[in-house]
Length: 56
Image (tube, rainbow, N blue to C red; front, side, top):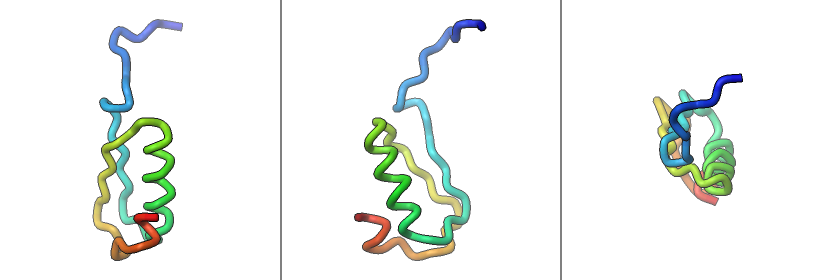
């Protein structure tokens, strides 16, 4: 297996959710990202208003 020339860090990764339907799923993804040091979450055309359940 070849070694990567560049090292990927959590800061170089972006997570994109396309048309999420449930705000609780957005919250789950955000919490998992925080646990692993990822911080860029992009929502494309969300089908739900982001409220309390997404922010928990």
